[in-house]
Structures are given as structure tokens and as C-alpha cells.
Length: 272
Image (cartoon, rainbow, N blue to C red; front, side, top):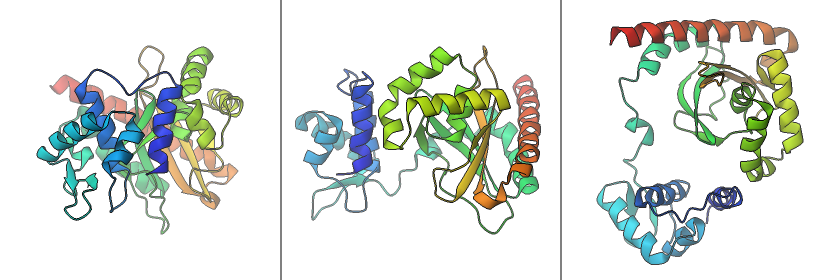
């Protein structure tokens, strides 16, 4: 049983969002998510049923459908289930996304100027999802956040930057729903709200200790719609690469990139 999978389900339940929904699609994606968190050996049927809170017959029926669609494999010898080696969720994104078309060359330019890993992240419900990543020229790059990786809002610099564009009440409600995720990450609601306040005052979120030990992260929010930002740009680097005197130059480069993405996106949309 994957520990993260059970924690994710616990957080879902504690947040008042039961996985026992009536929609088969929702249940299928819940199962797929648990299976995808498994190791090469896969999960047994009982493990998946326990993690999802669904009945074994329901899990078996949906697994059969996922196998038929090529999303899940069942190992012949052990009868355990694992995500198909041919499955790549990131490939399901539209290849002609106006945002990515606008951002891709500008992300290349930003990573070249900064020298460290630059990521473009969007909000997806109570999570953030990385939709693009570029590596800089410095020999040591931080690869923990890959394209398609999702994280609960509240634990990363990018989500703090996003929350800093909301009212304190809205931010607190999201964090309350994700409170178990915060605890699992060793964070408290109070500390996170203070981080949001600092990000609001500074105009950027600086995480002095990144999610990976020995790293730092700086994130800015942009693409505001109705006062709420829709995206973030984040630089992640080994800690000594971002001393205090380098924070402002990095933030300025991220803001330049964000402005250019918005301008390019407007042109992209008008062209279509």
C-alpha cells in the first residue's frame, strides 16, 4: 500500500469531499491515481479498494475497463495492478495550447538568463499542476517538479504565490480543506497564512527551505482573472544559488517573462 495514496484519500475525506461519488469517471480517475502511485510491483485489488474507499466489485469493474483502455496493466504472475508503461498523462494535454505556445520560447529565454530550473504552474482545483519546465545552464538542476506533477495547494512556493492573490478568507478556506496535506508536510495553518502575508507584501513567494532538502524556491503569480492569479512562474535551485541579494534580480526576470507570456498569449488568441 502506498503511504501517499492513503494520505491523499484521508485528506479528501477530512476535507468533506468523499470519493464515493456517483460518477464512474471520477471513481476511475481516483483508482488510476492510486495505481499510478505504486511501485513496479503494483497494487493488489484489496489495497486499491482500501485506498479508494470503494467496494471491491466496483474497483474490479473499473480496473477491467482501465485495462481495456490501456491505462492499467495486470501482472500475470501476481495479479497485481500497475499503471501502464505506455500511459503518459501529460500527453493528454492539447498540443496546441495557446498558453504553452506563448510560454515555451519565453521559458527557454528565462531559464537561460537565470541559469536554474524554471517551472510554469497552473491551479487545478485544490492542487497545482506543473505544465512546463525548463532547465538552466548551472551544472546542478532541481528536477523534483516535473511536467504533470500535482501538489496540494499550500505546501509549495507556487501555491503560496497563488494564495497571496486571494482574500485572506478564501485562502484560509482552501488551506482548511487541505489541512491534512499541510500536516503531512510538517506545516501549520498559522505558518502558511504568515507565508501568504509575506508573499502579498513582497509580491513574490520565497521558500527558504524547498520541498527538497538543500534547495530554495521563488515564485510569482500572474495571469490575474477577477483578482485571482491563474498561473505561477517558479525558480528552484540549490540554496546557495539564491542568496538574499539575488532574490530581486530573479524576481525581476520572472516578472519580465510573465509580462511577455501575457502579451504573447493575447497575440496568440487574437490570431485565432
